[in-house]
Image (tube, rainbow, N blue to C red):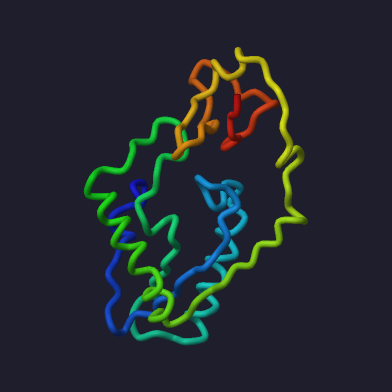
Amino acid sequence: NQECPREAIIEPCPDDFVVAVSHAWRYQAHPDPQRREGKLTCDLGRQAAAEHRPKGSTAVFYDFLSLPQLPFKGGQADRTEMEYERFEKAVAAMPYIYVQADAVLHLDDDLSDRLLPGEGELYSVDCMVLDRALLVELGTEVRIGGWKADSPPDPALRLFDRIVS
């Protein structure tokens, strides 16, 4: 990921314990914007490493953090040409990553108990509200990517809401 520290990206060695995380993406641009999976993923990764006691390090493959992503909040740069190439190669390799990992964590996501209020509903806002928002183009969609520095967030809109006209 563009914002992941270089020292966090490693190429596993034979003595390392590799954990691949399989999870649902609740939103197109970000799998876990409320950070609900993060702690669970860390806890389960530590538990798997403790049970297997690797000789080397424990490496975790979590696609969102391991691959260069499209911008998902205001001010982020798009992928570079090299990052696009790395992303395409990594997506092609993903089946092998999960097959060859020492452990795979499957995080099931039952959306029914965690829908946010108003999620999935259409609602209208004044165009002046959108003027204060940072809009992000994601493929063929436009979504809320944040708020301009001099503008407070508007309670009518949430991060990653899709804009339709």
